[in-house]
Amino acid sequence: MNVDRAKLTRILKFAGLALIVLLMAAQFVPVDRTNPPVGEEIVAPAEVLTVLERACYDCHSNETVWPVYSRVAPVSWLVARDVHEGREALNYSTWGRYSAEERSELLEESWEEVAEGEMPMKPYVLLHPAARLTAEDEEVLRAWSLASGGRSDDGPASSDD
Image 1: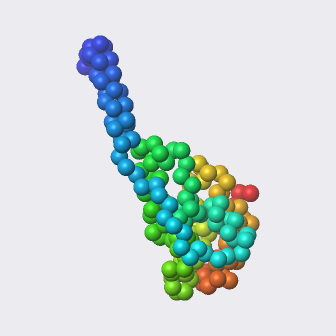
Image 2 (image 1 turned 135 degrees about the vertical axis):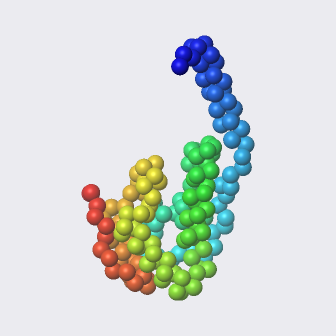
Image 3 (image 1 turned 90 degrees about the vertical axis):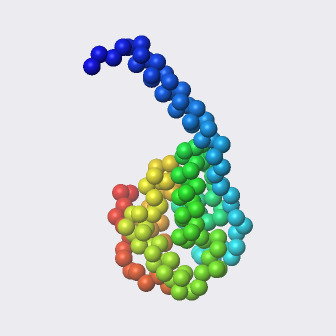
């Protein structure tokens, strides 16, 4: 296949320009980055709240700190989706709306996800290294989960600390 170099250059320039136009247009697609009012927030010991605020609150509360990259499409769409899904699954800012049974289940599920290394999510930790849970953080969350009604007694996940 003998493709004319000038023709290929024109095609690549057109494709690049089209991509730039699409990315610019994408910036006008509205993204919901609101933080609803905090309701009956979770009550926990200070050391637990410190871990939750550092590693969990951006996705699991109405106190999300929206980083600069959450304002640039298409990344903004992914961040907003993750936050909305996180709040739907568990929201520490509306903890009082959950029944005692729901709280117990949420604590157990949360601990299981932490113990299995699923939470906080790896892409989040890459962009927010302070959210990485240490073995000590995991032990704080495990003990709190058990003391607060979570039924799982798995040990902390292995850590490279």
